Image 1 (cartoon, rainbow, N blue to C red):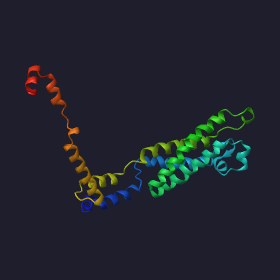
Image 2 (cartoon, rainbow, N blue to C red; image 1 turned 60 degrees about the vertical axis):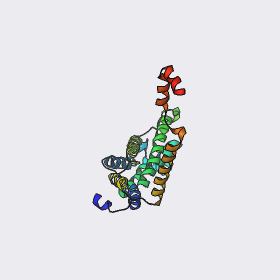
Image 3 (cartoon, rainbow, N blue to C red; image 1 turned 90 degrees about the horizontal axis):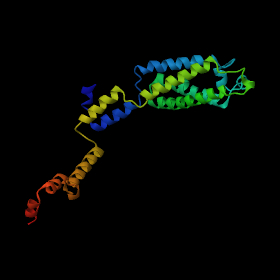
Image 4 (tube, one colour; image 1 turned 135 degrees about the horizontal axis):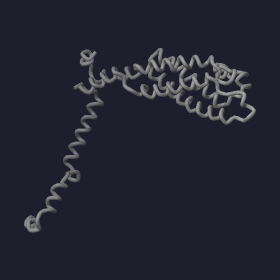
Length: 222
């Protein structure tokens, strides 16, 4: 691949790098992400609240309302489905960075809402003590937490292909018009800095003058 890239211009390599950035490289963390997806799907069929499976909470069913499901639990169910269920599934299938970023966003919101939902469950009034968080809720939270950690590691990381293309761009001799303009502007700026007397570093010379004997200083002045 490297020998082929050497034949491309800097502009072509830049376009290749943009194309590569749209594809997500999962690597080993991808297996953890796949596990989180499977755990979340399983949690939909387990009780999220006592006697109410997760998919019924997601569908805003009457059973969920009768179980006293809070608004935070509904928000968690929707965000977890969007982040870990829908967009993580698309990320695993299509390897698109855009889907990973959306999944990361929804999963992060779901993780925050899960903390609020668990806190409200623990501080519920005495009349709702018969209903509590089920094993499905804890499994879904675990899946969301794993997804957030994995996306934090890989969502903004360069793939090996991007790194190879970036190295080729750094070695490329030819530049596009924008690159030449930037290089010329940098050279002009450096030349102006060297010619500007205000930017000349004469601190050592002044320190030497101050440390010289007074007689020598008087002689220099004469």
